[in-house]
Every structure is written in C-alpha cells, then in structure tokens.
Image 1: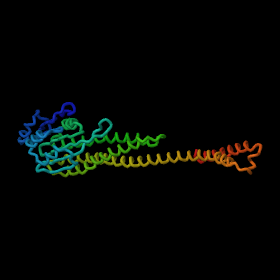
Image 2: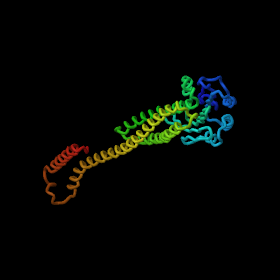
Image 3: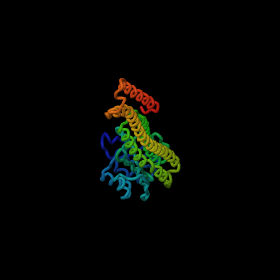
Image 4: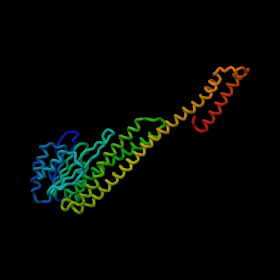
Length: 333
C-alpha cells in the first residue's frame, strides 16, 4: 500500500505483485521484479514511485527493460500530456491538479504500461494513489484483467481529483461575481479575477490534452489494454469532457465578469461626474449673479433700489431650488 510522501520521502512507495486471478501476492522488493516477470504464470507487477532519483530510475529501467528515451522523459518531468510507444511498452504522461492553501498546484504522473506491469511515477503536486490501489484490490475480478485495469483506476483517480478543483473555481467565481456589483469599487476584485483566469487557463492546458490521451489508450492493441477494459476508459473520457467544458464555461464567464467590472467602474465614474456637474451648476447660479452685480457700473438701477439685495437673494434661491428639483428628476443629484 502506498505511503504519503509528505510524511516520509520514500522514492519507492509501492511495489506489489498480483496473481493472474487478481489477488495480491506476498510483498516483494524492487530487486525481485524481474524474477516475478520471468515467471510464466500470468502475474503482473504494479510499482509506484514519487520523485525518484537517477539511481532509482536506472534500477527500474534494468528491472523492466525500459527504453532510454522513455526513462529520460520520466525522470526529467515537465512533459506535455502524451502517449508514446517504446517497443513493447507505452509511456503515458498526464497532468495532475491539487488545491493547496487556496491555490491550484499542478504536477505530473508518468506511467509505463507493459503486458505484465504498470509503473506510476508522481512528480510535484499529486495525491497518493493509495485510494486507486485499494479500489483495485477490492475489485479482484477486474484486477484479473491485468495492468490495463490498474491503469484505468489510476487515470480515473487523477481525473476525479480535477472535480474538487473545478468546484473550488466555481465557488471563487460566484464570490467574485458578487464583488463585481458591490457598491464600492475595489481594485483587488479585478486582480482576483485575473488571477483566477490564469489558474483556469493552466487548468485548461492540463485537462484538454487528456481527451486525446484517453482516446489513444483506448486504441492500444491487446494485450496491453484488454477489450473488457476499453469501455471503462470511455467513462474516464466522459469525465474529462465534463471538466473541460466546465473550465471553458468558467473562462468565458470570467472574461464577461472582467468586462462587466470595467463597465461598472466606468458607469460609477460617470455618475460621480454627473453629480459634480450638477453641484457645479447649482453653484454657478449665485456665482453668476454675484459677479454680474459686482461690475460696479454707475448706471445699474438695481443697485439703488431699497429691496434690491433681498430680491437678488430671493431670485438666486428660487433659481437654485428649481434647478435642484430638475437635476434630481433626471438623477444628476
């Protein structure tokens, strides 16, 4: 059973042999793998590694007879999702995703599939495959189909781990959509929208190629993939398609949310300018009247009237009140 590498950094976290009927055989160590494969009894080996060093990869190559280029790819990591044939084995690389402290981190899982073995190599952010192995050991009849069912269980586990990440994205998007229409503008909202779109784009790059990978695996010849197992890969492909569609929809919604956020900011600025213009108009009335009668011409009869000051104050107040009511009706104030 696999151990969590976070607790103790063992490079070989699982090395298990299974009989032809799917039952688990007594424990073996890494050096005994070639002995198990040499027996013509239908048994197979499932090995799990986590960030192995060069010496471990070299030993694995000797035990399974793997191609140099495939081992080099598996050791280097940073591979694009793909399926490549190397002699009698297939090299499969997929991306993994894991939510860590509110952010998504991506890792890789590389797999070597042979007639009688499956090797899984985890790099970076990826959960232990213990749940997948436990599931296989509970379904003994399915394990009798050999490494191809173990490969299906591993890929299904990886794809299922995409779903919680997508759900976290959806919750964050719902929160940000509410912030977009908040009364007060916050620059952080736009930054959070941009960060979320970056993570969704990275998720898209990890998930989109998976559909092609699954389709290629379904077309692998027997006995690498048993005919009875091919239908299960269609289920994995369906899950990948759902995740991919959900990611596309959220990316479109994020683009719309960013546009709406900018539009809301523009509208808010326009409303502020309207209010400033409205108050400016109200202040312009007494300013105009005061400057008019401050010109000090000799022949201005209003200057000599007994009630001119009071009339001027009243007219200015009346005009301001009428203007204020009009501006309120058109929502400039």
